[in-house]
Image 1: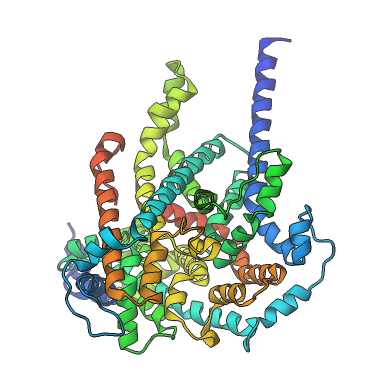
Image 2 (image 1 turned 90 degrees about the vertical axis):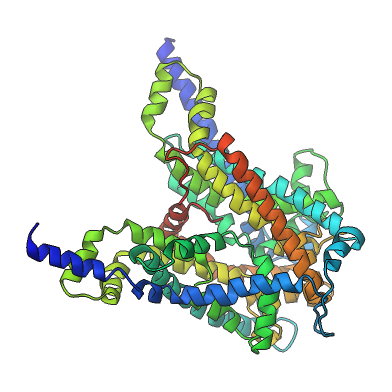
Length: 286
Length: 307
């Protein structure tokens, strides 16, 4: 065999090794999700007794029983609550981050430099330090146990991550667009919604999907601000069913965990190109 | 220049100046003042008081801090567990993310498919649902141990020993390496190919190329990610709360959990504010140390502009 051929086959072997490694890694990484789905169909004995990931039989009883939850509320309530919590929060985030991002990207105004620095600094401000005084504020104005605790901070641009992300995109739109629009007699707001918003549609979609999934999965804030079971979103409801069952029936819990994730999974796969764009543009978030 | 054109530019510039911009950032100005600056200040004030809902707060000076450092039996163990957790989770995540990004950067087919699959954990990983799955998988007779037995490796009582439980939580961080990987992959794509070609012509090895080209050029991105991930990990709460509930023997009583418990179970709000300021100072200290040392290991192409 000549040298060149050996070189080729050697490269083929390393490439096969790479693929095998990447495929195995992929399986390991998504295994917990498959585990969760299949565990939904298992009884506790089967879950801890059998080595197979697949259930012996597929019965939807855990889904039906789990859905009923323990108390007077079913997962219908928790599911609906989650939507009521998430949708306005996301809309508020989009409105505020578009306006504020536009303001910082395209205007000169007094104290701009220091305000911009402060906005960037809040990216690094730990939530842990704000949560107690915020709780006290919400308690004083009587917003505890309402979703205003989510809506209003979102509408007032408190997730500076999204503002920063959109700002980066505003900067990438050439100034010539603005000039042309002004010369045509647009004012700055018309410029925003007629020119910039259509151009930034992909970035705005990234904001929507990130904020949807984060708010959907947000546990800490819900735990602190929402107290009555009637208002629980899915994250709290899952923890509740884990705590209230004396003899935890894991199948039911896994069934509800699976159902709670479905909207996020659909959103992820339907919109996945926007995810990558969003992550790369800011270079930050994990 | 044409007269009309100059007039147009004057109009154009006049629309960019003055107070209009402030109007656009007004929502943020309000949010920043009400939900960020005001809480930051009041939190500092509360931290010098014995604020709770059951009594009128009175000023206690440095008592909260003295109590935390000297008498609170949970403080140092919680701090130690948190630091250990961050030290295991964050570097583990970033190294793994870089490693996989390097592999995916090597002209592979189906990169997008792998990238998508690897990204899933980081988008759903912080949810309660995943935390419950983790708890179930790491039980003594759970999937992970069954898999270890299958490989003829010793089984671990993951949730029964303080250190193993901490490892179990740190693994949840590492599992979510996908978003960092995507960022690193984008960074790798920015590195000019000519640099590698020149290095190959000079006869340098792959290892040399990694340490002399890839790593230095990626350091700004790595640095920024490191800082942000450390800040996030120091406050982690959900995993410890749902998977281990701080146990066993408070071995995973992460600082975020301690804060939550003191504030919202015992309603020692003043004390919890003091705790949060201790955490804040620690985070600032670590960030400053990282920034100070960064000129030794972070390579800025454009002389240090992050933003």
